[in-house]
Length: 273
Image (cartoon, rainbow, N blue to C red):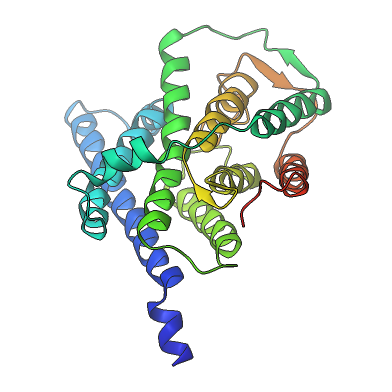
C-alpha cells in the first residue's frame, strides 16, 4: 500500500506532469534546432557558424520552446479543473495579496550581491536594445513558466502537508540538470539557477495560499537584472552584460542569500505552512 501511494500520490503525479513538461520542452527544442540547422545548411554555412547563431539567439530559442511547451501542457492540465478557461481563471484568481517582506528580500539580496561582487562597467560593452529586451523576456519566461506549472499543479492537485519543501528542492535540481544537459551552448549554468528556482517556487506559497504575484515580482526585479545587467546569466554569462563582477558570484553566494531570505520569511511567519 505504501509503495502504491508513492507511485500514485499527489507528489508523484506532480512529478509525472513536471517531467512531461520538460520532455515536451526538450522535443520542441530539438525540433527548433533541427529547423535552424536545416536552413543554415541550405545556405552552406559551417557547423561553427550554426553554433554561434544558436548561442547568440539562445534566449529566443529557449523562450519560444518554453511557451510552446506550456501551451501543450495546458491542454493536459486543463482537464484537472472544472473551469471552462482554467488557466485564465488561475491568473485572475491566484494573483495574491502583496507582502512587503518579498520586496525586502529581493532588495537585500540584490544589494548584498552587488556589494560582494564589486561590479565594474564593461569597457567594450556594445549597447543593443533588442538584445536587452530578448534577454529580459527570455529569463522571465524561463523561470515563470516553471512557476506557473507548479502553481497549476498545486491548485488542482494539492500536496499533503510537508511535501511542498520536498517538491521545491527536487524540482529545482531536476529542472537545472535537464536544462544544463539540453542547452549545452549555455556558458553560465551553475548553482545560481537552482537557488533562483527554489526562491521562485518558494514565493508561490506564502501564508498557506498559492499565488503568482510574488514569484513574478521576484523574477522581474531580482533575477532579470542579475542576468541582463550583471552577467549572472545561464546562457550568455557576462558576455553581453553592461557590468561585470570583480569577484565571482556563483551558487554559493546566491545560495547564502536564498537561505537568509527563507529564514527571514519564516521568522516573519509568512513562509509556507
